[in-house]
Image (tube, rainbow, N blue to C red; front, side, top):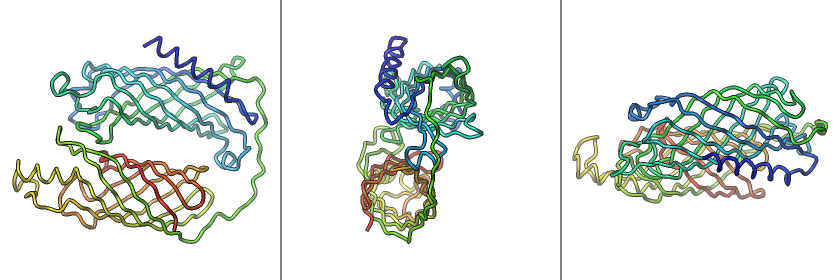
Length: 365
């Protein structure tokens, strides 16, 4: 483990050297964390046997306002992170993650909020013969998110500084394959920062007042992916979601949208058949129910640059079979390609229970 961490740290340092452009500057930070696994589901109680600990290594690129969005968001950083975590349980093993992140600053840049999204690899996933107790991770490759809220003070001693605070680290495979109860770690972290340059450019502030408001626009979107029901070994199936919605931009940062969508979830077809045969009549399922669902939703879009952050709340108006409840939520990223086309990467869930990761392509009409 130690050799891998030092190799990655060297890679991050090398990346920093070749990333100095447009008078920007990079900063490295190395953080140790220690904490607890959150009890969000009673099914993982047997997996909470110790205090997880690990390292977060990061390279962040500073911004100084050369682009308008940098000024609007108080000159955030963006970069890459690597995590190592020992979950202190023989059935869970260890996790390694690689992320893209943003750092946002408050209170005269003394308070840093980081949000990071990426992929992780676990060393000991579920196996029905050799590791059937690991109901948290059904696959070796996981989706992972972490957030960090730290007090940060740079350049305390020459280029070195300190940061400390709290981090929340989440691992899940978003029901790509069962089981998937996931793991959330609530931790305290303490770290050292190192600026790669002595002299930093001045922050630029020359924002012009613009009217970002737009009329209602209409969009069509298709989402797809694979997932599995909670029944282990029931099989992975593809799905399609057809969405039509209207959106309206309110200002530089915010927009709203509302629409309707049709869900064609093949895993649900298999789930209905299984329940109808194995437990006829239980859960209100006889085996001949329709697997299609229709939902309506409202949402918010937070515009950053070419990317934006989506949050949506939906309700199934056509819901022929009970599965995880009628209310669903969706969160993720949207990327614009010109004025008409866009792509999305979103997580759809029912409360804390993930249903799937969706890959979407859309067009503005």
